[in-house]
Image (cartoon, rainbow, N blue to C red):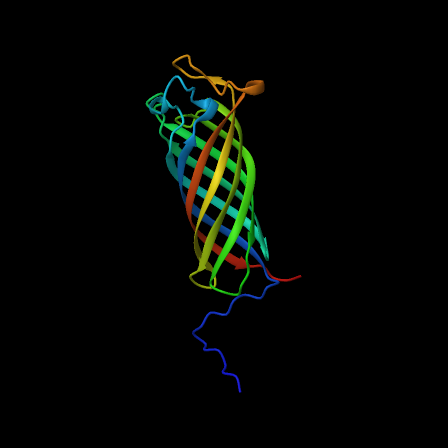
Length: 197
């Protein structure tokens, strides 16, 4: 005769549930390469786009095993004093694919794309596109609260611009330039199970 599960043990949600997700993320952006945004003659110490940290807000819909979400993230980037306060803003559409195993800890793959802008004190010096490709892990604290972490590669495609020192940046092919970031984020999310029709 099989033992009945204890009432204190959380029961994983059914595999066919649909959820509304929302939460915040604390993000670290490490510069892997300034690329065309930071000309080689300057050296890494004078790169206008350096590493940074910031905050993101995520809202999404999850039909298992997927999550489709919109993300707004802003981060304060080091700019070698070429900007007073370098702010990178990203607006991404993201997709996660979860490796469902019925456990409280779940891993996922993620991808995404969207527009971004970079400038001084919330201004816009240049804009372009950002993509995301990475993986993460999520832990179910309770039936409605989740915490997690993710690591992702983020290429940034900038439109050519000239900074206040007169240096032309992102001066690559067709007036665009590529930079490369490695992003790490710690997520805090809530989920509400949506009623079935």
